[in-house]
Image (cartoon, rainbow over all chains, first blue to last red):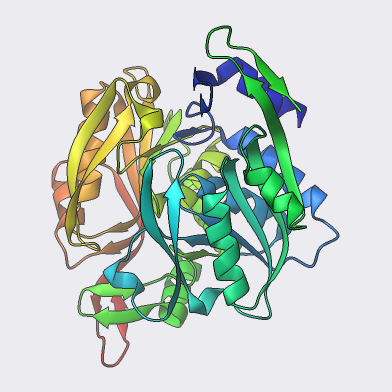
Length: 191
Length: 191
């Protein structure tokens, strides 16, 4: 998706060989025009799939999930990272190790909102080692729902998450795949 | 906002005198059609204000903030609840005590994304005791930005957050104000 790749080049900040900051338009300040275009692009790529629900994970996935859900005309479920007194009851749970936050946290989805009749599109902002996605996939499959595909805004092609998903035959659509990035020159090479 | 009030009556679950679950359409599973209508309604109510940025707090505020930002044609900034290695640098910080989670957490906004030139609309899903909103207001005012108003989806009128904001002369628009709710009968009385 060219407009996204150009925006990453313009406003992304490479903090290290493997850390890219896009908090100016994607995951702290959110450019609603760009995110809407991203939602439309995912809806276009998965238009032939009988998706009735979008699944993502808080917090950075929510705006993207919402935009996709809006264009597909379906609800969005966002997995939660901590138990709340308002979310008791039957939940699917998994443990996720965050690449960004360097810590492990519990993720939950209420059983009410993913069921065997659901055809789910899973979306997230980043795909690095794939731990968060593996957790979402595990909970969706535990629920007996069908995974129609996975939509990622920025895949770090030099980490193993994308390869692992493709090897397991999930349909993965990444709007920008970064092959390499250089914190000194600021250069980004896309696949 | 009648469609919201009816939806709360239909799908909301009153867990106690002061706890209302709306995770079926607002803050776990998100009804994208309803949230879009909510975004449009806030945009209509604040149409005369020179808003150039929407501010909210992760995670439940993000879909609402995005919808409002989309209708106003402005970006959304969501305050973050924990320090990330991707968010180092100059940040505004505040401490917030969550009514829902019964705990205290740190909230941050990067100084890059709120500045004295900004005219900010602050939005959130719930207003109870107002701690989260007070934190967002404090950071916005520390940044020297102008607060054009506060938009709340569900105000618990029997807790002090709304009264406190109105007494301090903030323009507060709550789409549904609950005067009382009864966990036994399930009855909700709106203001």
